Image (cartoon, rainbow, N blue to C red; front, side, top):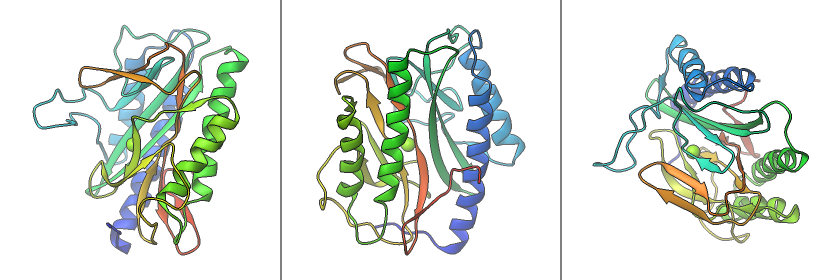
Length: 254
Ligand code: MG
């Protein structure tokens, strides 16, 4: 199990703050008519101007696959994650949009995501956003030494399903820090008291992905992930450090 030392934690804290600033600035710019490309440019500028590197840019899921072409994933409505920003991808009133970025700072990686509504959004879609954020909060309450990854996963599932939504089953949160993705995998569903034990010093990217309809998703090519039923999906993510009592959110503005 990978744990981080104090020097690494210091860099992760700083990188996490830069990531939070980048996501907040992109989220604040969300409005009808703006392109996903512009949001990508906004977040990348914050990351680079603070001496960090956008870690998603040119990231390859496997050796021979197509690198991700941008700093920010912009996933609209039925896109679950990994949406590729472009000038042609324009946000429209009523959309919901997931913004996901990764930062490398002094060789250490953090990961975070938010979902926001574009202009006036249907109450049902706003509820999906709210519940997904609640699922993240419930998950974080379960991140503490002595608990298991299954406690975190089941907390996400319980909040999503109690509200009639479906946690995605084919994508996972993950350890993070020395690389963009590390062990353990952190599913959005599962049973309490199962999986790897949580220990102090671990750094985890917890990321509930919740679908309005059923949990099934379709993969197309190296990046595209969409809901099978075409209904929207929401996504929130924080990178957290496991402390002796619980966890410290590294990708938060405060
Ligand atoms: Mg992640």
